[in-house]
Image (cartoon, rainbow, N blue to C red; front, side):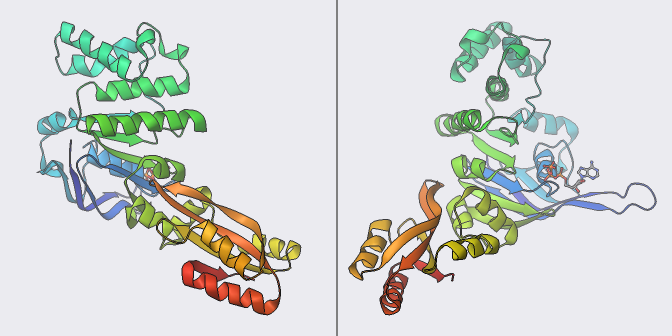
Length: 342
Ligand SMILES: Nc1ncnc2c1ncn2[C@@H]1O[C@H](COP(=O)(O)OP(=O)(O)OP(=O)(O)O)[C@@H](O)[C@H]1O
């Protein structure tokens, strides 16, 4: 279990050539990652996620701020001391970064060889790791004989070899299909839960965050623009960037063009209701409408799970006499978050 604290971290790259300008890849980012937490950093291309990850494993030096790994500021360490910190950090990559000329067992064994672990111990550990990731039968196979999901399992076994307290995952599932992604995410969840390993992952996929992260930082142009528990951040987004991520994976309100199309088709009053854990649920809403003799069509949206909690938006068409519909809207507004759309 490892705790990571980023305190006002910045990374600037000097201008390239005469006419170039300095690049601020990471700009005053602070993140507290508790021991045993799965923390996701989400952002679009160029937001600074990869740079941030390289700063945490010490492959690059921050130009400002402090990065404390279990209380030790790695920005101030010598290269030799940094290597020792790095040996307690496992890395997982989008393109797996495996040795194609070696067997699966040899790939997993590699960090143990580097760490100087004696051979009998290494062999036992490799067998244990392959069993943990469900690849015991593939020890003697070569990388090209494996599917993408299996390759990532080898990557994960290798990352776990030296018993790290922290795993850094760089777009670990971006190269995989949705089904295989879910299996790999389930394995990461198991590692976190059963072994207590802290995980810092970077991604541009909202589904990854929704499925496994406890807390999230949204990055944009090098800055951390939102941060907190996954449910809190995504059920109540404050920035356009976060709203755009939410709309890729969660049912939200129709955009203006879609709303116009809905309006063409549905002549009744259109309202959007927000459902969240602890709030009014659907039976109450539909009962309220039925009690007032108001008919209803669900025309857009859905309900899903965010960080293990219910969240969603439904756009409804209300059908009935004007005054009944107005009364129904007033009653619903008492029970749940409601917006009259058109
Ligand atoms: N070594 C470097 N030298 C100069 N600029 C760099 C360097 N590495 C990254 N950058 C710049 O820093 C910014 C952030 O890049 P970074 O790769 O960290 O973003 P990202 O969010 O990981 O995006 P992607 O998912 O596309 O990798 C970009 O403008 C990028 O061009």
